[in-house]
Length: 147
Image (cartoon, rainbow, N blue to C red; front, side, top):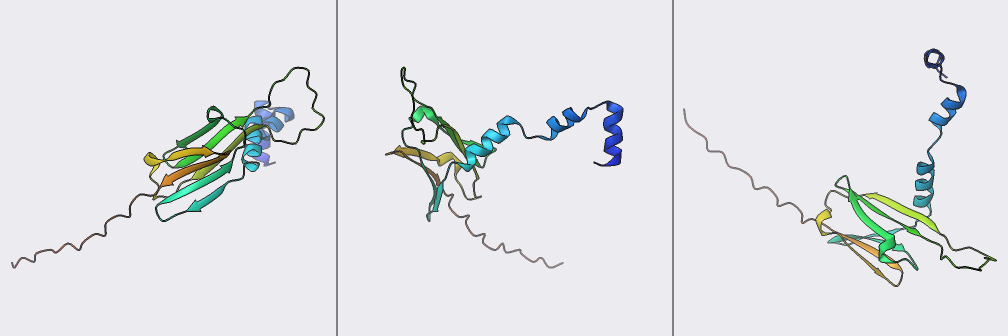
């Protein structure tokens, strides 16, 4: 640790346990990182759009959230919950349950106002249309005045 920082900590009376807590990632960060790592996504680019494809078997529309944050970050998130049944004991449990999330910074040519999402046969497709390319600027002719 930096000697100056160590001195400041001693002056402020920050115990070593508190230092460890301050430098450890939060539970939310760890949970979100795991959710992102376990949510595979295919991304396709077409001439007029980008399409994000995620397998989501067994999920209902209310369990899936598609949002645009900070004007250009596409966030796909949700939660797969375990079915609650009485008098049931799992002998094997391999299907993933819990939160899932992915974030993508969209390209500059994305039309965030036209984003659509459909879920068919357990596959979510989020389509982000592209903006039309800007019109090339015509050269501006400046009239030369004689002085």
